[in-house]
Image (tube, rainbow over all chains, first blue to last red; front, side, top):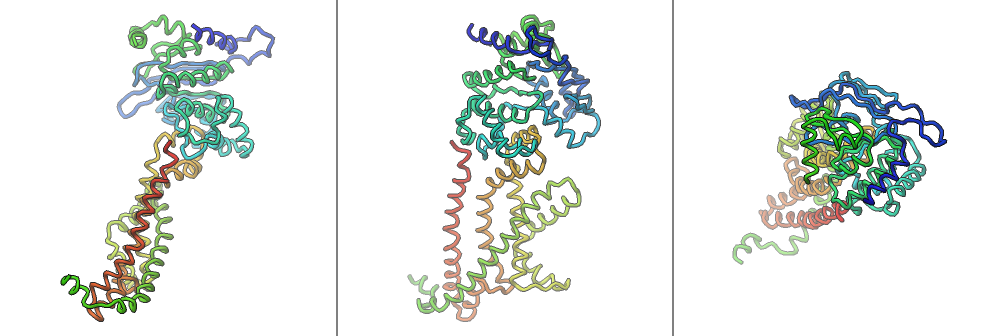
Amino acid sequence: MAYDLDVARMKALSPSPLGAPSASGSPAPEPSRPVIKLDHLSKSFGTFQALQDINLSVLQGDVLAIIGPSGSGKSTLLRCINWLEPANSGRITVGDLSLDCSKPVGKEQITTLRRQLGMVFQSFNLFPHMTVLRNVSLAQERTLGRSRREADEVSMGLLERVGLADKAHQYPVRCSGGQQQRIAIARALALDPKVMLFDEPTSALDPELGLEVLAVMRELASSGMTMIVVTHEMGFAENVSEHTMIMADGQILEYGPSREVIRNPQTERARRFLRAVNDR
Amino acid sequence: MDILDSLLMGVTWADVQSWLPGFWNGFIISLEVTAASLALGIPMGFLLALGVQSRRKVLRLASLALVEIGRGAPALVLLQLVYFGLPSAGLSLSAFLAAVVAISWNTGAYTSEIIRAGLDAVPAGQREASHALGLSALDELRFVILPQGLRIAVPALMGFAILVFQGTSLCFAIALPEIVSRAYDIGSMYFYYFPALAVAGLFFAAVCIPASFLVGWIEHRAGAYARR
């Protein structure tokens, strides 16, 4: 399949999954250490246990796909990582920042955490009253303190990268869903995040528009961005992400190299889920 | 025609013309009360809208009390409370000032609910996106929530402004010489109640009907950025 070939080429460009020194003469990448580490993370809504004792680490440059039935806690996990939902217990470590979720955490620390994480939502959540350019520039000015000119320059570069520089002065409603999601990706990238979090980025899009978003995400992966992607796109999980995690009932069912997890799941629950996906 | 004749009581055009300067002065007073009440009341409504959602209990309860009394009590009661009631607490206000205070209070209370509803109508995803981008609470309000929430609230606020203008007619009860007081004076002097009140009504209609059309047009325009 042409699609597979393309991905294979992309993969060749991307850093190796474990961050081991590459064979080429490029400067040795720093020794692999987790960019994101979750220890015993738990979250409940009332009596409903949404996440149970999640332990996970994601290495620099790694792309992790999280799949699983709805209600399994995938989105909640992402939302806990950037504190949109405060977890009840456990520890979140992003770069040098380590937060204990069972203790009260100050606003500044939450902001510091969020500035290292780029978030892309299922429903894009662009600001409809601002032009595309303002959407991408606003947070750079307000949270990074860049000047308007600097911010706009960065924004134009990013819009170029997602193929939408010509939309800079339009309003988001003038853009298709796929374009809006690519703008949302540019907006998240504008803050130079250490990790990009994607919460079902293509679920609200028809298959064709989804493809253009996936293409941008593939390019991002091949550029070495660390990514956690909650998705139902098995092709992306299998071919682009190094690791795949299957969740159910707030727990990690399976975790490992994508191909192994998807082709050869160990648990009956995971097999059932993957059968349902493949029968589609 | 008999009924109309008996209602008009033989009032001539010359009579009406002789009333017009008085009505005009009353009209100006009504407009002044409206403008002052909106200029004070809408910012107050904005602060109250934020106040009732405040995390500080004292602020929240104080805001809630102002809103609930301002909305719960009829405007006529508020007017008389301020004009006739406050002097016993040592604070005597002119009829004009009393009218502005009472109607501002009323405006603040009602518009706080309109503004709160507008802010609440901004989709939750907008707040989440602001949080995810690390915007401060103030920046989120200033750049994301207010521009969208106020745009939602503007047509309702303008509709309420029309009601405020009509509400100034209650000021006849505290002897403020606005439009209805003028009509009342003419009525009690010559028994020309119907014709005088009809003219007063025309003054209100001349403002309110075009204003309603304007609100409709702005409502249409305000939603423009959300349409393809």
